Image (cartoon, rainbow, N blue to C red; front, side, top):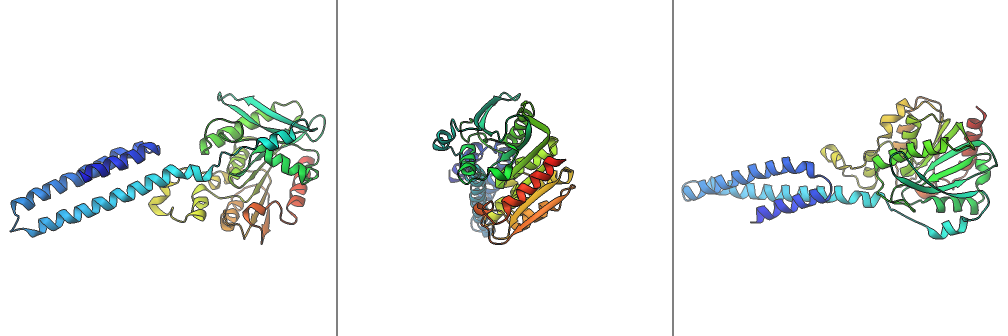
Length: 335
């Protein structure tokens, strides 16, 4: 009975975590162990006094099965909860109300070809046609809060002459759904296509910009659509390295537990536009080595800015960062 309960428990974890495809091999392994255990029990009863090895074999198999059940249960749990750790699904109605009616700010809502509706915020720096920054935020950011911060900190001068568009991930802000690699990449292309159709956007000078988690979307967009430049702040090479920096267990076969692969290092060699990469040696969330490795994979010109003492959430506040962003945007706009 305990064996059956263990198998059913593991099956439940895997079904709830979306790993139902692993139930067949799991069931096969459990069936083999069960049949082996039953056979050994039968032999043990048959040769109760003459063959003590059978009794020991039964105990060993029981222990191995218990370990396997616990291990698979833990793996299923790790797989199931990781999205809740990576994606915060934040909203900020206070910042939305703060920006409403202010000159230059406009709430955005559009229906994409994929049938989904996306919400976010657009800041128009000038009247008429201008270059555009498409920004992809970190896991704790939402469009209204980000733009409010730029407004209150008087940062718009660093984006002089550029419109600025930030569409929230699925599940963030007013968006329905759940963020994940597939939805992030799908959304990135939908945002670009929406922006390119706006009459006041210079489509030849669209720059994609990402911070932390959003760097994956920015890299994928630079691969998939024609952009004039790519700005990455605290970027990771891939999801496995990102996860391992937070919880160093995803090595060897455990790499398969990483749900969001986010393989920026796979796409980077085919990205040819100029790039600005900003990374800190004191970043506690994204390792400097991962950012540096990614920066060396791009085929276009790369400006790598190394910071020494900036924590992950303080990258943009570090001395000289916005000046470097401004210079990069000015160069991209001049081409």
